[in-house]
Image (cartoon, rainbow, N blue to C red; front, side, top):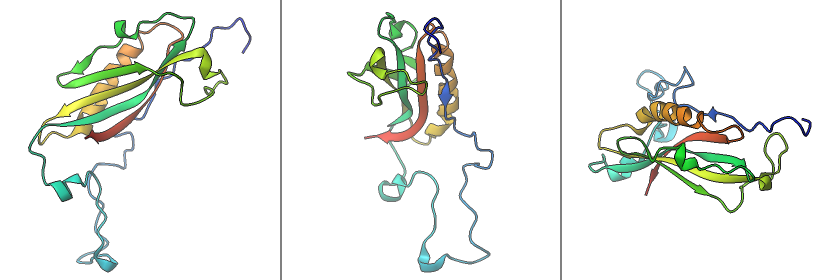
Amino acid sequence: MSGTEPFETRSARMARFGDDPADDGTEPPAAGPGSEPEGGYTERVGNDRDLWEGEATTPRAFKLIQGYVWHPRDQAVDLAAYLPEALGPDVHVLFDAMPAAPFTFFDDGTLSATQVVYQLTVVAIVQPGQVPDALLAEMAERLGERLETTPQGVGWQLMSDLREVD
């Protein structure tokens, strides 16, 4: 990269729920007809919080997406002008400037100290019986559309999170 080429930081790497066609979200098959694994252990897939708390009867907060957004320090960008406060009913976008990035360099070798880095989180209030991962794909697409409207030089790295916020 020469000094005259624009610094390209735009990336839209987002792990999306359901990208693995083999993962249909169901329990794994039993070891065999009528067989119980040795020692009585049964593998469980999914949220096992209900094992000790029971089925949820009140709304719960879940992180859907977690990551970083950045831009060069010499570029004045008001992210609030590009990112909505909400992506849908009870789905909120939170972002805060960080005092320093949690890494020293970007993938292309650019020093993180030359960038303003924000932590970005998408949180959803999930009603009883609603599955938070069902919201993920749609909210990721909506957020991606908004991020694509940001000026040249703004970059991001986002991942699905799907953890309950206590």
